[in-house]
Image (tube, rainbow, N blue to C red; front, side, top):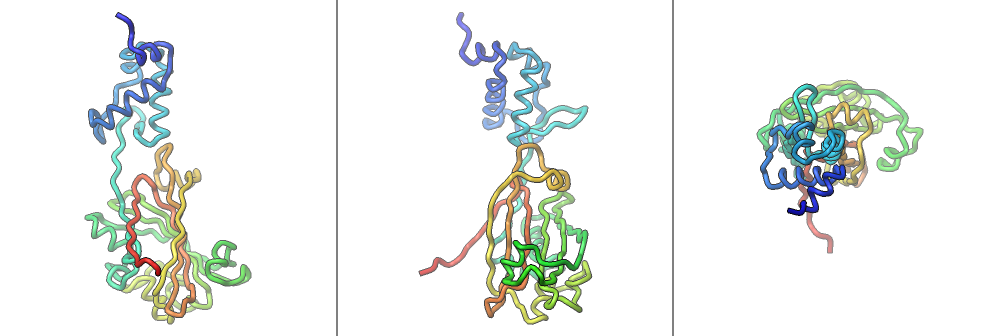
Length: 261
């Protein structure tokens, strides 16, 4: 009996045949999230190839974010829990004052997750160019820089770095405290005369830096969502910018907005 084309290619050491076989099996839910894949040795025996060919197939699936390797345990199909980031409504009064963790805390509660936020640094710096342009200020202007890392059920979800003009935040908790009080950071801005009324969000995707991949525990081959958020008050004055880096395998964006005439 003649060998099938797939088997014949595998015999010639084409790792892509094995990778596609495993992709198809995952898509058909023959292997579900958390399942352990056959070992390199077993794959090599099944497909009648060298073990390094099976290793290349697994490496390809890791690059695509379909599987993860655990040292000493094997290779497992990755789960993909979704984190839904609300759009316009995440900045409503009810959302931004929820449980002291602001919009993120409200999103977590809505999705049955337990939120945690680490504020890792608060510094006074000159406005970076990409921040100055969004705040309509010069790069000689002092701003506060607040770096936060966000967790859901103990798992890192996103990084957010917030900037605001020093003239707005000086003397407020935004300038030097991780504790924003019961009304959150937007309550602090509102008390300064800058209630968030409009938002602008610019969204793109890219591969993570090595630091981002390490801190957010991003598997091989998974990109990040790169989101620049600008908060704007009722006078159309931008008063804060937050640069979010989000795991693209976890995150989804949910927006509703009126259509312009």
